[in-house]
Amino acid sequence: MKYCSECAHPVSLIVPPDDNRPRYVCANCGAIHYQNPKMVIGSIPVWEQDGEARILLCRRAIEPRHGYWTLPAGFMENNETTADAALRETAEEAGARIELHELFSLLNVAHVHQVHMFYRATLLDLNYAAGTESLEVKLFTESEIPWDQIAFPTVGQTLKFFFADRASLKNGGSYGLHTHDITTSMRQRDY
Image 1 (cartoon, rainbow, N blue to C red):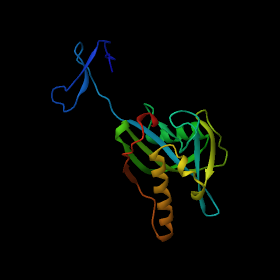
Image 2: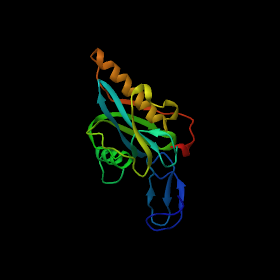
Image 3: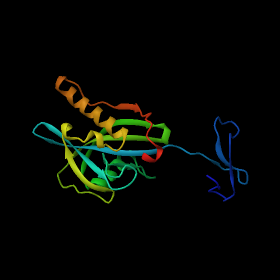
Image 4: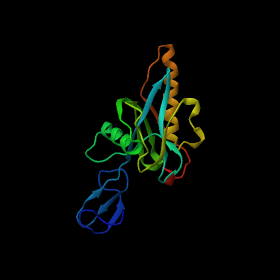
């Protein structure tokens, strides 16, 4: 940040009084510009068939990670709830209608200033199609998922949590809320 968004004067990176970290501060108007993590919200759209879960994945048509597979997800917008964001992103990227369930995973990606959240979801029908940010969308069973072509560690970890919980259902287990910190060495531009 170089200029104040309030008055357009140059800003300085300093620790404001009563704070504990550097912030961009405008010496002209006194505005303190806080920079906070971005929220990436998505869903795990599931279609049940013959007792087997199939997950709807999108192959990315945009950078970062063009051509890799991901769950439908994206940045949360202002004036949106996390549930609204998950529904919107699923419709935009996969053209899919879903019934949203509980929050399933919350993954901190501190090195790129992001928090990723995924909701479990049920596909309402098989009328889905790639949106402008997807090359294609496709249903995968666990054994069919192209694990080495998953776009982001948060997506891979969420899928692992999902299939582990699903396997536990046979022994009286349930779906839970999973948290995880991603400390990968992926380049920042790959998120």
